[in-house]
Image (cartoon, rainbow, N blue to C red; front, top):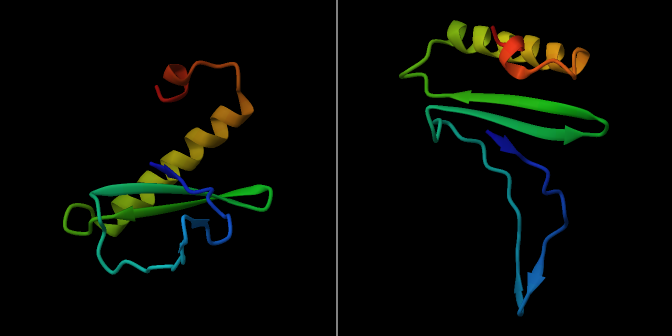
Length: 86
């Protein structure tokens, strides 16, 4: 799980300048990765998965369960997580 919130401009330190590039991965780097990114006042969620381990339908179902859980948590903020995922 990654919270990607580093939107600062290119950094400079000790005469070295960082140049950021965006990379599209054709192959999943890990078995399963959730990437959360702020988009304005919203939160974007990206699911990356290894298609040698998971079928697309499984990834869609996992995404749906995650969104349902997050929605339930945001509605019932005082409810323990253990009760949400039962």
